[in-house]
Image (cartoon, rainbow, N blue to C red):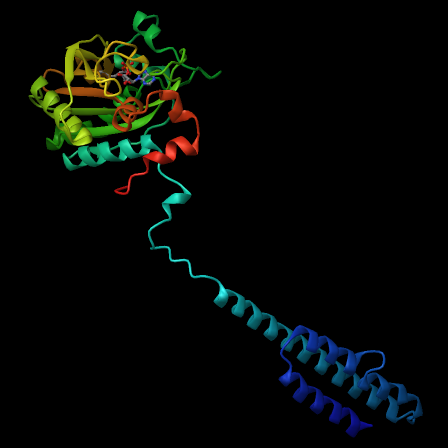
Length: 351
Ligand code: FA5
């Protein structure tokens, strides 16, 4: 019996080696270890052994069974791994560095103009800052020279949280934090503050073709010694000519914002109707795009900067309206529509 058991072990080992599929493994398992299998039929002969031989042969039979079971598991795993590898090898290669298939998706037009503006201002030495959408009353209003109950608050009603915080109604809400972040470098090392901060804004107001309750602005500030309105006009002109790359009509008129003095409204001749008047420009031929002005001394003071030594300009570019003008989008509400069909037309290869 001992020889038979050893022979089964050897034969099993050799046969297992030649198997190549899970089905073959299963047939082999049944043929050797199954109820009518080779090993089982030998075990059935145990009864014929003497009392001394039985435990010795029993132990050997168990060892052979364990050995074969172990080999079966090993072989099954080996076959499984090979199959998986074959499957992986047969998959089409995905090259992460290959240009994406643009038919699958596209950047949102606001992302495109935002990136374009960031590129332009970065090339002129501005840093790009990020800021939260939930802010305090101090950040959004008080630090900007708009005390509680000031009538200027009526122009920017927004959404309030139960804890008194609010969804920012203007990117100007980040000004105070930016001044505080960079004032030491300005005062101690003479490094001018030059920053832009794009962001989503919220206002509780009725929507129409050029007003949304959720829209994007991009704030920009520059503070240094002897900054004047000429610097402001230079940067505004450069930005607009780079974004549109064609002649556009612009007008600058006085505008009131408590955080600038003097303040201006910078309007652009409506590119949808060519200045004739249409719903996109509220039939005026002009679209308010980028109010701006010289930073009010009280705002500099709140940011820890001495207004007797330093001056600066600030602007609040309407990014969503810029996207409308750049891409000829007649109704601002299309931009928040989530309609891929409308938005995908603006895919830009450069981006
Ligand atoms: C402001 O929000 C000021 N913080 C801008 C500013 C910054 C002035 C720094 C001076 C210095 P205003 O409310 O006008 O200003 O908004 C600025 C621009 O955001 C508008 O010209 C317009 O382009 C855009 N905007 C304002 N409200 C909406 C709206 N409901 N939907 C879409 N765009 C809007």
